[in-house]
Image (cartoon, rainbow, N blue to C red):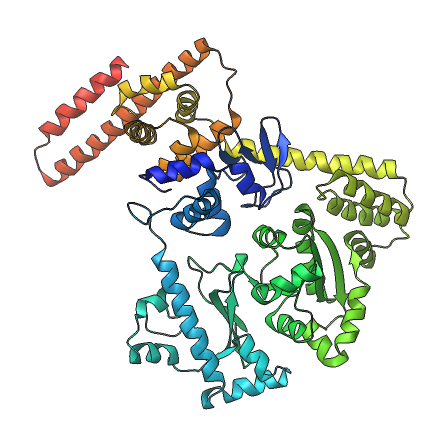
Length: 576
């Protein structure tokens, strides 16, 4: 991850509390010595993400990600090692220098600078003779000059306008390739003859762009730039930079589907409106939003696509503990079109009639199934129960059950039995996923023994050079920590480790912390694993010599030396 930690890094890791850091992003619940929650890095219905306050390590048994506080911040904020370290250093009042292996992401700064240059250039172009058609199109969509400037909406002409400007001003072309504003060869503009929408993050930095064609016959109608270290469309929320203060003030966020929906809502005073980038609402979006609100309103077109989009997002939103309302506009009307035709007061009155997810599910499913038919009524109830099963809070879950019972005239005890069945199935499927992913190998067993018991680590040093790569890496990490006169603790092991798979193995072992194995059993497991792994290493080396010998035979070169070495290895193998 970081490699070659400077003393200040260990000092920071010793001073911070990983539980405090992670609980700013996720809601943690006590689970014995540890804490648990739903993993922010992959979709899941039952928690498999654990945090150890004792060991200062996290691990998800679902997707396998693990690490210390630095690693968590790098993943959740999509930032560099140095940036994560800087955030933690500020919290504990430590100054860090950019030397050794710790460097700020220069690449990120180059991309952000290229984005800012392009956004301002495209915005100037839209008000020039090049942008006349684009500007007329925006006027037809009822956008005005002050808002076009505020949102920095621009236009990319049909020729390689950006490329020629970069060359003319002698800018570094490679920066614009990194930012995906030029193709990978640096010979073509990404956007041609498109209206350009800059996409910002919460810090008001331009992280990417979307482009809409003026001619509806051209496909795709909407085009995003290629993903890069700054831009990932699944993590972006269009409008969040302009909307964050309004979301805090009004206490909720309105989700719509497109750029023009966001713009039109903002222009009409509903600045708490945001949109995902043509994707479903993701766990990352919700983690981001959780910092400023716990209430969401979905405002979608009431056609089939809009209903599907709402249903697709519901489970994720409910599972993250948000209070949610749904407002479906008449079919064929998105917020942009609805405001243009009926005005802002009409849309506000629609929003005031929005439904919670139980009412919405009953209403939508009643259009699919016949509520008067007992079998089909059962289907409506079961679909709604699936949504209720995602509510993390037991009291809230019970209140929604009471509501469903009353509305559908079914005894609550019957609904509770069905809900229990759904919850059990969720747990079973999650458990099966976890057990599939975490198949223990001889390597993992050996690492488990040595990480949990230092005396076995010392024994392991006697076999340096005789073991597979992963174990050799662990020995090197331990040596580096010892040379710095530091304690061999999990967060330091992880801090020194650059092998993601090894980080995952160490963090999972630390969280499991299975110290119930007797000393006698530990000794047996250690020796058995050692024997197997030494054999594995020998077999790998023998195979390598076989390949070398075959290559030399084909070329007619003498291979006596290789044969001798292989015979020595075969002799060692027999002794094992």
